[in-house]
Image 1 (cartoon, rainbow, N blue to C red):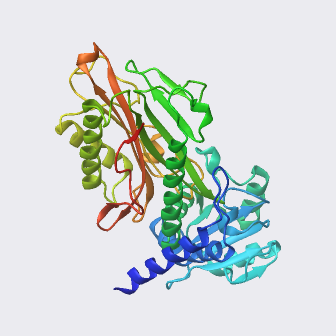
Image 2 (cartoon, helix red, strand yellow):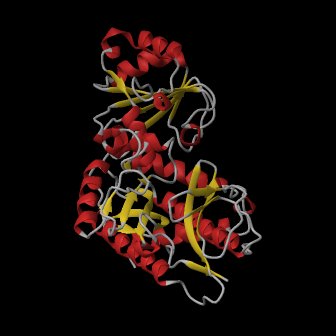
Image 3 (cartoon, rainbow, N blue to C red):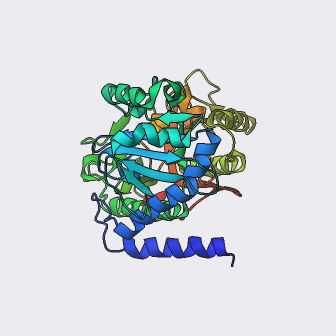
Length: 415
């Protein structure tokens, strides 16, 4: 077994052991401080040099005032956090005017030392945590930004650029311990979904009695979602439920069919829509690769979906003007794990701004393989159809799309 595989196995095992016994449905998984510190260390050691060089940034200045979106990575204290690429494998890490973990940071100084600190390193391109276009990444206050520019002086102020893309790349880059945690959260989520399905009593249980995002759509596409609808025999139920640890989260989906009186197995139309789900899963796994943008991959997937005989729809709504005999497919492969927001993370989806589709999908990207299937059932009447939503957590590796846990295997039959 290679050293890399051994490392992944040991980290995965450690996370699995640490996680056992701490999770209670609807509550947060207890965070082990050693695991959290390891994630921070590895982000600085592995991901930071890569994303700074890919973004052609010599120095990253992050002005922080109390709790903010990067508190987990940087620490909760206020201060000016400066990361400088001085060559070699390691990025220099400094905190001016604040405190920090001495195992993470190399230098500590006063904020008054900023002009001299920058001049000594003479960076050609300085990324600062502001954005003109993306509010959630415009993290620095206007007052602090003006103070910073003034302190840098005219020479270095002209070299300042927004750090928004750098921040997204830094968060999107995954360390092995993050991947292990993602897998553990996925396992917990999947088990929790099964426990919720165990609660269902046909004709008694309401959608609102179950935890998570629970929904049922009728043959006309009308949806009951987390309301007081009483689950009936013949219903096809979707359930999404999350598991999280501090700023890390994952949510999976399950599908269940409530057998009618006299039924012992899934009816043919329900089995058929599941077969479509498996066919589409294979299409997605073969055509999603790291290094391409979300937009490029989306374009390829649309082509492959339609070549396979499906109709691609850019909204999760049955298109009554499409071929009435063809099954329709909507996709939303959004990031999972540690992110600020779905709009500020790599995404393979027609949803969200073009910004999120412009990112290259990084190696070890953690996301959800979420796709919705609308299958016509002509014998039920014009426009009548079945609907399911498949929602599994996956990772893009050198080999393509892989599952860090057993993905959804079947539509569960409830008696």
